Length: 435
Image (cartoon, rainbow, N blue to C red; front, top):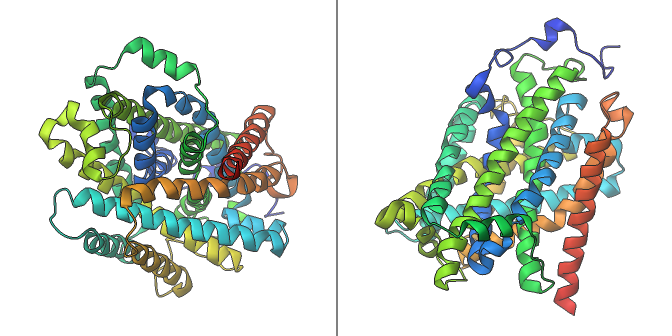
């Protein structure tokens, strides 16, 4: 049977120009795009706020999050690669409507809020350099981003995004130059300091939400489909199944991307903890305050570096969110959508991208503090993580979905542990609001 989930032929397995790429260019690939999109302006704002508020004492969250980040993105990649459809198309096929509709709604609203916060972050960062009102900068940035999505190709978007991500390494240098106490860094990295108050749990949930955001799952599962379409596998039966070699490459790409994201996470917390928190500045209200964490590296030019970094990853991440929302909606309706489609060929798909972009821009005219909004968008995303993870774990353990590629023991341990931890953290946060 053509649609049987199993081993692909050698001819199919070697198809496409991407297959033979090795070395650094293969590693800076789809996994890096996903990893960098995970370090969007919301993530930068959340991690910076965590470091400023709790100092080096919250560094432990980075190594704790790494296996969680890896397993959830790997699961979503597996669905796209083996099942041949995106995450929400798979959910529609395998679960009743009463499960599908709430999940689509949660993901859709979460993507709008996250995109709005990220556009606000871009506006606040660029406002350090451009003396224009932040909402006006947001409108300009949104127009540029949508123009790239509408008139550009998937290949163009991917190639631009993967290089913009490298700007984030500035935080590594800034953290080193801040000269934190090495013993305190080591202790804080490996010895968790946990508190059970609303402020601390809010930051923890925000870090989880922005690290394991639903838009990352949608993007990764659909990116696997997009990559196969680029290889010429336009029909579903051509995309069904994956060889062990393909799954190993996917695992390596995802691990590369999540390592990239996690290293940046760690050094943003370290740089802000060693500079802002150490100076008694525990709340980040403005982009200028967040930018000051880069002063050990750039001095008075810190604001330029901060603006470039936030704008760079923002231009990377916002299209991932708006496109992710479009994937969610069209797949929830039983339709198809791809960045390989021309706008005239799929008006619904590109129409949803336009609507999400407009709504995200409009939210920036409501008067929210853009730096605070970055953290709150992470908290909102945190509440959508546990139910979506539960569905992904059920799907990737179903032979009807992934055939022989069901989860191994380690993947199941990591996946179920991540589901439980994210659920308990969100419940604990809600409890602190009422107690």
